Length: 124
Image (cartoon, rainbow, N blue to C red; front, side, top):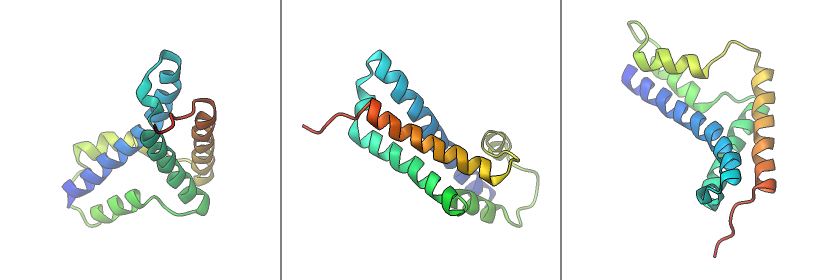
């Protein structure tokens, strides 16, 4: 099951990259003229992704991907895998949960601000 847990961890990391990198791309793209950052589907998916993360944190619900990965690793024998070792260092920090809740909520507000200041294109 370690390979499946590593897959979940990799998907989790890609989702984090999409959320964080997506906001950076929106702001940078607006400045340099990247048309794709105005794509309504991309923007809606991005807003929903951080919205779910922020809502889970505000409601005190653990991230389902983290829960799934932990469950898949329960009882696993041996040292942590390569993917787990490196991606875990990027995703998990030993801080109080309120710090993450605040960070997710503020990040969601930044994404909403991007909708206002860099609005997605309207459908034709």
